[in-house]
Length: 84
Image: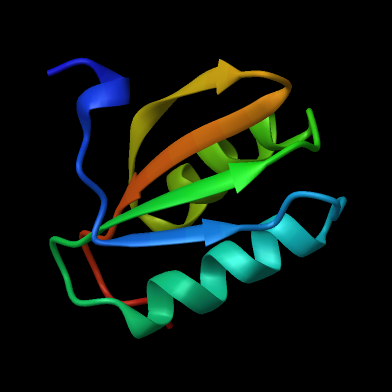
């Protein structure tokens, strides 16, 4: 499946915010989600390209990929375990 065909369970738009807000908002959303659900984060801060995959790696979540469209980044995170 291509990244732009992923059907997220939750869409969260953080455009207009910059580090650390996108990471904090991602953590907040993932905590509220059920295991197996997918979050689509929409951001315009280029830092998310590195920050979100790194956050997934450090917290044990699955980074499914991303694409850029019209200056916005669409990043997909699958919750695979509870956040502590």
